[in-house]
Length: 151
Ligand code: HEM
Image 1 (cartoon, rainbow, N blue to C red):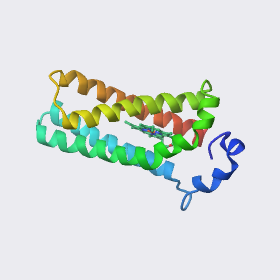
Image 2: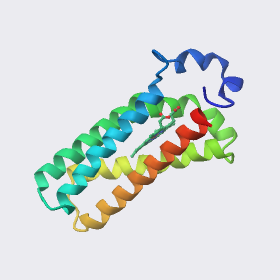
Image 3: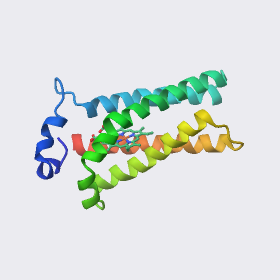
Image 4: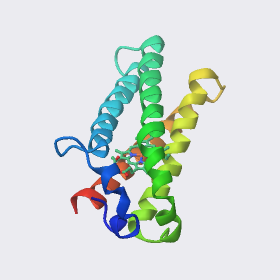
């Protein structure tokens, strides 16, 4: 259970308990790692030996769509639920990881969706930026998980 949260929101214990010891946040972590795998395969199709723009788009599209679903169903809901705590204690380590993660991840998702529909002239540098933001968001997500659920 997340540190401090039960103290502030005792009624949330029901929301956060999962099935067979696996919570939706464990599920989110596992799915995010799988999505990152799809993302890396997408990168391979523009950078690796076998280049195919069609396959690149397919894998990136799947990663972006699945991520949007998890943002909507799990991470966005968690952010809203804990927004009081995040605003109140924004300078503490846990909340800082959370809001920087949400901003970086939000930017990565918005840029990703934009490039699925729109082709800009400087597409390569924008895509590089999106991939960097995505990677940082994932690392911060993992840091979040370690900080709140493992330490
Ligand atoms: C590229 C985009 C993103 C990636 C790769 C990503 C990845 C992750 C990972 C691996 C976790 C840890 C598992 C967990 O505790 O649920 C996590 C947690 C979280 N993420 Fe994201 N995320 C992204 C975007 C976002 C966005 C846009 C938001 C804001 C709506 C957000 C808000 C959160 C929150 C609040 C948590 C904590 C969930 C909890 O209560 O445990 N994330 N994310």
